[in-house]
Amino acid sequence: MAAATPDLLWNLPSLVFQTPDSALNNSSTLLMESAWIALGLSLKVAGWATAINMVLGIAAGYALARCRFPGRNFLDAMLTLPMVMPPTVLGYYLLVVIGRKGWIGAWLHDSFGINLIFTWQGAVIAAAVVAFPLVFKSARAAFEAVDDQLEQAAEVLGASTIGIFFRVTLPLAWRGILAGLLLAFARGMGEFGATLMVAGSIPGKTQTLSVAVYEAVQAGQDDTANLLVLITSITCIAVLLVAGKLAPGHAGRNRE
Image 1 (cartoon, rainbow, N blue to C red):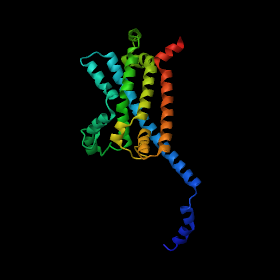
Image 2 (cartoon, rainbow, N blue to C red; image 1 turned 120 degrees about the vertical axis):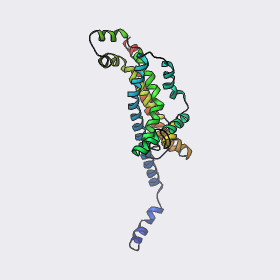
Image 3 (cartoon, rainbow, N blue to C red; image 1 turned 60 degrees about the horizontal axis):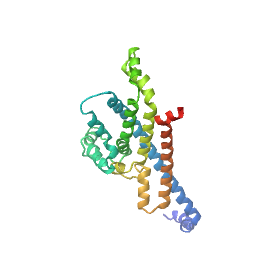
Image 4 (tube, rainbow, N blue to C red; image 1 turned 90 degrees about the vertical axis):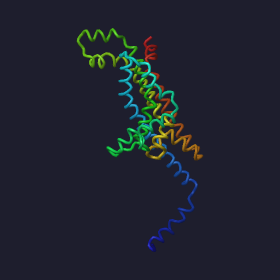
């Protein structure tokens, strides 16, 4: 303890009499670090959610576009429900399903020791559920716009069902599907209500950009909120511009 005292006394003036410039630089550095961490987490959550929706949304969109069965319209309404349901209500449903006492969450915890609540994986599930209708509706509309005669011609030539899907249907529908995926990515980036209820707000672990903006506003940190809002806005505008370029209607106008 005595050996450490001279060093402490020697450094005491720099600790107590910190200049405004150095304090401002430290504050700016911490602000940028927290912003980049939140941005990286948001990109990771939105990316994984979009990847999940790419598989599930395309499969559901193709099934409802090509299959006719009783209850088809009801299933379409149920799959579209997350688009109009309040995020907090959707977050509550997710807690009921994947929470520690939920019928899936309890099984995962008891069988594998997996806990999805207050983790970034839980944030991925919340973002995927909220953004799913954007991929599903875009994929269904894109598949319904494909000419059936082209698929029938491929079938006459001996192509299998899987071959027709990957060689004819999917290449013709990819622009609409990709536009939906980009919109879902932007929606996942901005998801707040369901993510906050399922994953919470743990800095560096589950605090996405939208949640970080909320926390900054609540704490009165206007500089942090302004920076986070600017980053979020630029990212979402860029994604929407790309999605607009890939929209089937835009492509048709360009050809004209």
